[in-house]
Length: 431
Image (cartoon, rainbow, N blue to C red):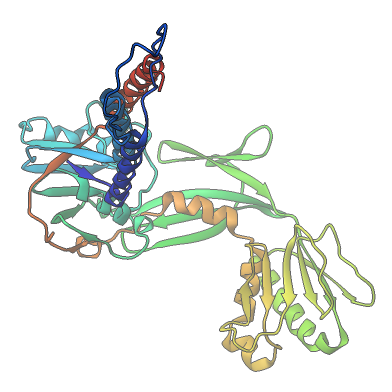
């Protein structure tokens, strides 16, 4: 047995309290009625000590109750030896959905097991457990979970998507053998379409193990492309297969600029950058400018650019605020939340190019959020097995696998019983 919080065991010194109380307690004196004291003979008086152990049963019960409370606070764990699995296979959910892949594990013996590569690393016991499992897991976070497995060897079968690699490389106590299963085929996936005056602009992602690219082209409705009745979905029929993608109407982007005279030059550079973005995005950007003579904010604008030293108003819109900061490493930085940005230095012809002002403004406008969300679902860039390797750190403790059993529920039951018995005995003994 061991304790999760052994420092609480110092509270066992509290056992001195009931012992001291019982040592100093006095028994109740008995009264004997007699007719006359004349018949009593004198005897040498002897004073009995009042310091004596009184009510042994109550003392033992109260010591037991205090001891159990202290042990419960220390959270005991009872350990027993368990047998290790010689080999554990861990399979990513996307691979576990294909019977052609999982059939190779049908003849596992009792010393081997197969688990699913997801939170908790559950055993795969039936096919229904692996259906509709498309979420990309955090590979290194799950690698740390593998330290808790009672096994000698671990083999992980994964698609090795780059989007699953997060955080710092972990240290693990097991040697983990990563096997990346890659089809090595490029996958082309239409994402969405935008309505244009001269037709529809279709965005398509082409993803392979090395890279993912997005391309766009103007299409016209015909045999291959067809809109649904509501006009919000595009049906693409190609090579005998059909695919439906959402259709969006791109409204003009409205930008409201509030400026002070000292920042007029900065306003000019911002306007020029917005014009360049309008051409690049092939989308109209409507810019409204106004001096900061009075507090003003266009509630209908998508983005407010506040080039003034006055306090900017509170708004739910995206906000780019002038806030000079000589220590800032970028001309535009993210503020306290994702919708607030700061312009940290005056703009000139040199830093507008070197610090990519136009590109930073594109991040403020955030016009590609819908495309990026859909792209994340079809991104199939892969990692190599060496990139997935964790740092093996052998344990300095004695190498033996133990299983822990939580004994706290049983101790609470014993404590409850002792409390009932103590109250019953105390009532009978009048203590």
